[in-house]
Length: 111
Image (tube, rainbow, N blue to C red; front, side):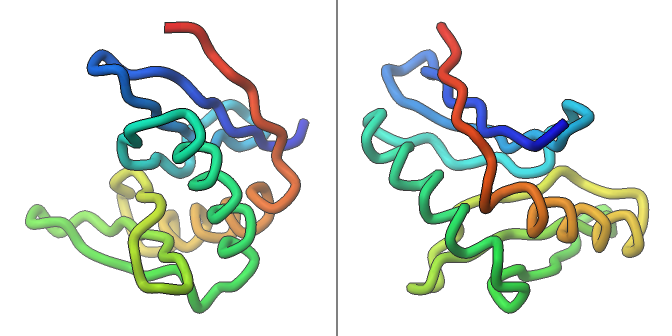
């Protein structure tokens, strides 16, 4: 099963999306956008930039847990992963976004 973007409204009239792997696990989460059109632009940016491994930045939380962000060409963060148990799991997450995002369908969810 292929990955998919789930676009959904937020409580304050915004929109956000999650990229889910084929197994249904969330592998990337967006910021909250002011409009549906802006969120759809964000999805297109993820699709484009996820194919370039140089756009991924590995980070570490204050608790020492690894995670990553995906950045657009202008350096702005366009998606963030969950916290991982170790570096190898985080690297698998990056590989999953790299593989799933470019061809993922967009599914719109209700509030």
